[in-house]
Length: 139
Image 1 (spheres, rainbow, N blue to C red):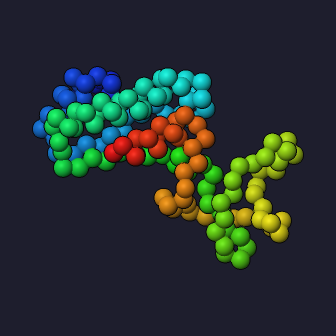
Image 2 (tube, helix red, strand yellow):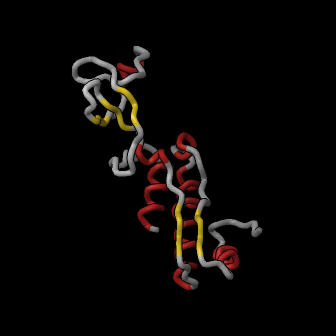
């Protein structure tokens, strides 16, 4: 085990010695905190990934796996009563003030949450989500 900072090129290069695959899970995690600790999240997640990628240029591996996050998808996918897939969008301030958390279709019927495929367009609502999207795009 090597303990170090993903932003330390020497530690990252040390960690790459003798490996043929990298599972890059290093990240600062937290949606809410990322909105007021912007520099920290950007440094750890984006710059840290850049340090790993630069080290891999010098010492290539056979496989690189980068952890993503459900946060980059925003609200999940929903389905109407007739089985049609729907993107729910964002809850309005008025909806939240009324305590209405569930989404409804144009007919007023409740939408049912369904598993969300990776093909859903990103909804990058936080610095954390943006950084995880950035990581996956780089790798």
